[in-house]
Image (cartoon, rainbow, N blue to C red; front, top):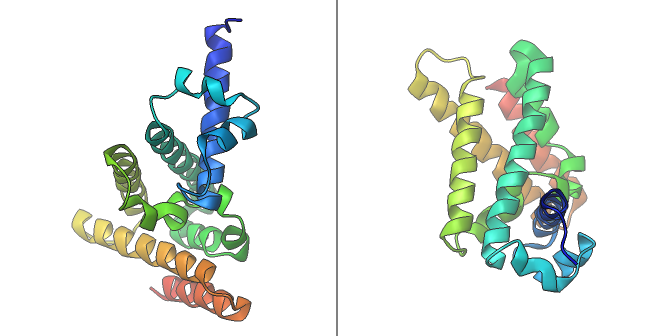
Length: 189
């Protein structure tokens, strides 16, 4: 039974959304194509009608996750006005974000894994990271574009690093301390 182009597009969207969430939760190797398809409510056999490989899906899932995060950030930044970077830090450096990697930052969830992936995934993350840096640099208060970009890179790198560490430890108090310390440093800076 053939499906319309619109239905095929909706199916593809469901697959990518399911993959974006599950890859962030379990890692690229922690979930297979069959599980993603089941999560999307589709059969495993239909996968190759949408994607050439799992890596193609991984790249598209990363792009979607970054796009969703940037949309959320844009709304939060607009609402915060002049304190946009601080508001984004408060959004990012939370136990809620720590405890829900499936809806959180793709770099904090999969960044280390990306180094071992093929060019499609790495290109998707590289493009997304450049966009994040450009977005944050536009919110920074420095005289030169170079200083704003440098500040954006160091800010985001500290947030991602804090989230990776906070998720990695088995001590909730230490995890919170890591998030709080980076949040306080960001406010002071």
